[in-house]
Length: 102
Image (cartoon, rainbow, N blue to C red; front, side, top):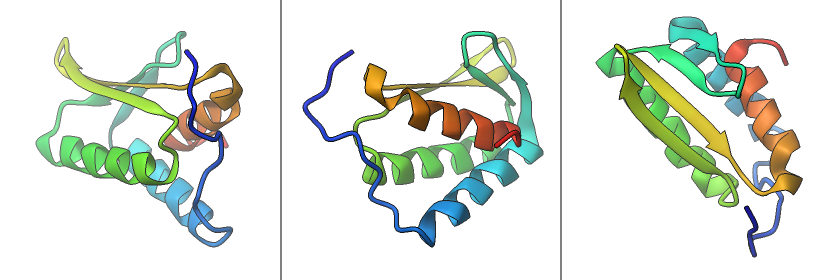
């Protein structure tokens, strides 16, 4: 995957920790597993889906080089996060934040 967008997050130094904490809170609420390929599996709860959609929209504002895919599968919500090869540290940071391992 390649992108002409700069690989940089536009959140400020004070905004980033708040965003990561928000991802962690969502993860604590409904993350069921992180698949080996990095796909996040969440409980299929309508309020959780709304929170995920909101945080995805917010992430696309600050990191437009990332791609998110959220869909239902097997009674759960699956979230995939992808980007250009150079964005792998950003992708990993988001996955770790949801999983509470950052």
